[in-house]
Picture 1 (tube, rainbow, N blue to C red):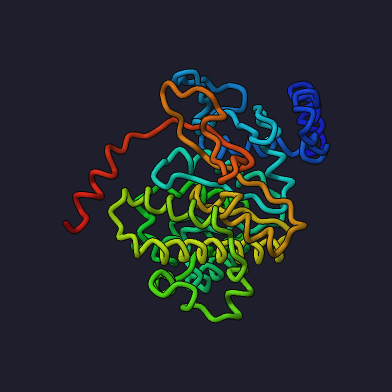
Picture 2: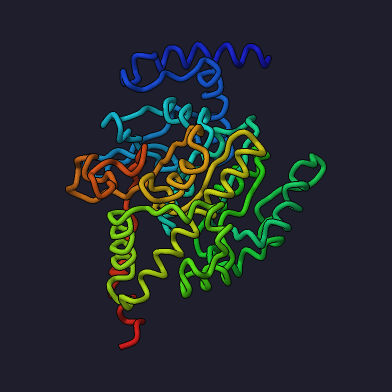
Length: 359
C-alpha cells in the first residue's frame, strides 16, 4: 500500500508540476522532494481539518487571491522576481539546511500558513527554534522533547504550555498553537531561541560592554555591520517606536537587537548541527538577510544553505509585488521569498503608543 501511495503521488506530482513550471534560474526540486510533496500536503490539510489539496476555493483581496483554510497565498522569489508554485516552495523548505520563517506576531493567519512549512520537515531529522521561547526554558523544553519521542505518551501543545508556563510568557495573546502542534506532530525537536529577559535589559542598557569579549567574538558581535546597516537599524527602531523613544536610548536598543539576532542564529546553528537541518520561527525583522539572523549564520557557517521567507500583509491598491520587497541600504532584497497575506485591522498603533508614553 505504501509503494502504491508513493507511485500515485509521483504520477500526480509529475502531471501537475512539470519541471517547466519552475523559472530557468530556479533549481528544479529533486525526485525525492517531489515524492514527499503530496503525502505532506495531505497531512497538513488533515491535521487542520481542511479539505484535500486541490479542492479549496479562493478569496479575492484586490488583485490578490488567497486559497485554502490557511489563507496561503502565492510565494514571490525576490531573486527571480517571479512566483514559485506550491511544490517549489515545499521543496525549497524541505531541502534547505536552515529555513527562517518570518511573521507579524499578531496575524494569526501567518502562524497557520507556516504550519505547512514546518510539516515540510515531516520525516526529516530537524530542529525547530522559536523566538517565543527563552534559553533559560530549554531544560523543561528538553523534558517535553523526551516525552514527545515516547509513543505511549500524550503529546500536545497543552502539555507544553503547562511545562513552559506559556500563559504568562506574553506570547499567549497570539495563536501559536498551529505551529507548535505541527512541530509536535512531526516529532521535531523544539529549541528555545531568544535570550533571557534579564540579559536583554542588561545589554539594552549597557551596550557591548555588558557582554564578555569572548562571548561577543563567539557570536560574531565583534564584527561590525557597517555604518549603513547601523543607521538603517536605528531608523527602523525609531520608526517601530513611533518616534517616542529618547534618541539616547536607540543605540542600546539597536545593540540589543543585534544580540538577539546573534543568539537566535547561535541556537539555529546548534539545532542544525544536532539534527542536520533547522527551522526558525521569528518576526520578520529577525529573518532579514542583510542584518538579521542570516547575517550571523553567514559569518559563522557560510556553507549552510539558508532560506529566508517573510510573510507580508498586502495593501489595497498596492499591487506590484516588488513594492513589498524589503531592501538593504543599497537596494538589494533583504529576503529570499515573500508570502503575501491579507492585512488584519489594528487601528493606529502609533496613536496608542503615544498615548502611553510620558509627556
